[in-house]
Amino acid sequence: MRVLLVEDDLRVASALCAALRRRGHEVIQAMTAAEAVAADPVDLILLDLTLPDRDGLEVCRRIRQQDENVAIIAVTARAEEWDRVAGLRAGADDYVVKPFSMVELQARIEAVMRRAARAARTTAALQVGTLRIDVNARRVWVADREVSLARKEFDLLVALARQAGTVVPRDRLQLDVWQTTWTTRHTLDVHVAALRGKLDDAGLVETVRGVGYRLRTG
Image (cartoon, rainbow, N blue to C red):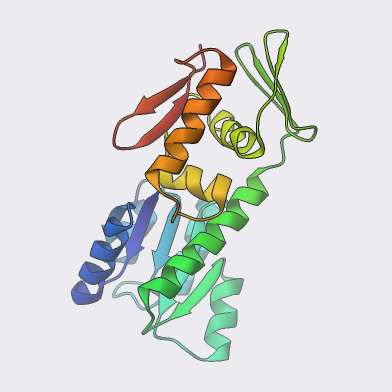
């Protein structure tokens, strides 16, 4: 998962960066509001509300206007109830008060990303080449042949099909399918192998080494 860490305290930023990378996330750093607003698209933003060039609440509003789907967690020392309410009203999905443990932050990240994944599941039917998926009925066809999939295999295929042609990182698949990033690499790999076998096209689900998987579109 691509994470934008907006934090002007170098000591805090360094510790958070290291902890996030140990958990497999790709981290982009920004120390100012200007850098945060200009950053490339990411899956999640950890946003300090006390920045040197602009108030974090204003930054949060600006980012939310640019991208209504990106997950935002305010990470700040502002602990008053009014501050929490203001952060959520500015567009943050969650609010974490410093100091906090990495275990708590990881749990909040997973909860926010689960909500984001559920919100994205609005399409009832998906078509990728000869592959057709009825999401509501949980049925899959390759050409005219219906394929029977186990529950997690189906969820995995849908997660890939929603972003067909692009690489879906391993941790994002783990969040979408198992609602946690703590599953083992072996669990995901086994389900991908089973899915490939049932689709009868080993190349349909492509491995992108060190990153994740991609559903071929052609």
